[in-house]
Length: 598
Ligand SMILES: Cc1cc2nc3c(=O)[nH]c(=O)nc-3n(C[C@H](O)[C@H](O)[C@H](O)COP(=O)(O)OP(=O)(O)OC[C@H]3O[C@@H](n4cnc5c(N)ncnc54)[C@H](O)[C@@H]3O)c2cc1C
Ligand code: SF4
Image (cartoon, rainbow, N blue to C red):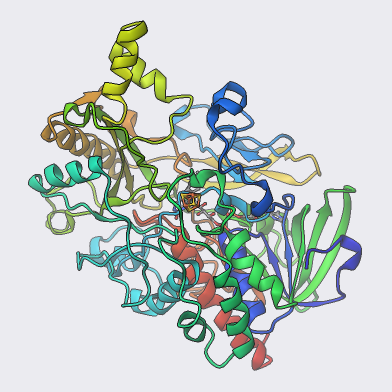
């Protein structure tokens, strides 16, 4: 249940710090299998069923819903108390050079960023777990695709992911029964597919965590919780309470009918229904405490409602606060045993921070002009995408960068927002009746393509404690160092060329400049909000922070289940992999607790 600080139990089996994708998945699996869990969340409570403005039109909002510094993704975006900057919670960059600065997006609310993420849910492929073996760069994971595949299956079945299998290289198929049917491509997506194919670029069904039909509440629960009839019953009931998407609203506002995955609508309700989960919001964890033997005893946190320091204790502590926040907690947990920060005997905590490479091009397509009015809101996000298609050429050394990217494409007639008219207006140049005619002509004729590419971890991209910085509770803050390598900037330049080629093949014209200099085309570090790394997972305690179970080498009852352990950041968006790893880690914890090893 949701508790107040004075209702904390003396000791829990597990403390989970954070309630987003990682914390949600960790708490879900543990509580469904009987462990007593305390979840500590720095943000406020958030109830999507009552707080989601799904049907408000932009004209009802200040500035017609346009973005503002405190609502970066627009007035109706579901993020509360979050953004690139959070009052009273600063961070800094070591360099004043804009190319070396890191943008850090945080959401301070129950469910974290899962309330408004893009829901794109791609599996890493077999190559993505062994990148160093393939091209000699970065790090291999101490596990294989085959090790994680059963957990991808489970997460897809639990949260509900639409998509299809196409048998393409390093783009894993899901076993029958895992995926929901994909929505049909929109007209712009069909046109992209037709012309991209001529250029050798495949366009296939996207995978997104949106229910295109209701989940099968009879078939799935026994597969997800074999031998556990209580968990099956709770999950079946919960699945019945999720409706299918009705194709009409912006998922970034959240989904009150639970058709899309949010930790608050998918992981937490069944976990709370077990009676095994206590959730304390407004609890800002500062550090992990140890006993004399070097085992974690619990955490110290600030109760934000009073500003007072509090403690909670447990057999196991799991950090799932998002990659950089987890690093911050570890580095702030200094003791005689760990003067450089907890679990940091390798000196690697904070190192090898990664984001996703991003670059975009949009174009106007005359063949999409003057389409009859129709609704293309669809599933609230992409219906198709292009997986990386040049693995063989890259492996043969025919490209001047080492890793691939996928393409996310947008098109169609959605509900117009504050920015819609500015783009269309630049095409018109007319007034009055002419302007109206032009709006009808051009509306829906613009397509956009965004590349999402792999970054190779490097020594120059990391975070550390800022010797000067403190947040409003006196907790030391992070300072970031950032540098793209030429692999990433050349990849960004390749994206620009590919996207403009596709737009031209469609008979369209590129809007704006096609940037041939990758350093100018690439989005700043952190800007794609796929930050991972900082507690490197590896097979050797001397050179890594956690093992393949997310268990820190130095403190055996301390785990990390967010994106911090990622040894590489494949082009595939990270959240599905975070959840699959978290489920695998909790299975390990449950087995170790049952054996009384933890
Ligand atoms: C606009 C947007 C679009 C995105 N689209 C996609 C996408 O399409 N696909 C994809 O895979 N990923 C996407 N992402 C990224 C995705 O949201 C993250 O990968 C995912 O949410 C990470 O889960 P997490 O649990 O590690 O962190 P979060 O979801 O950020 O949750 C962490 C939680 O921990 C809490 N916390 C932090 N510090 C503390 C502390 N000290 N004490 C207590 N609690 C703390 C935070 O308040 C937060 O609620 C997107 C993100 C954004 C913002
Ligand atoms: S588009 Fe579908 S999944 Fe997205 S918010 Fe609307 S109903 Fe929910």
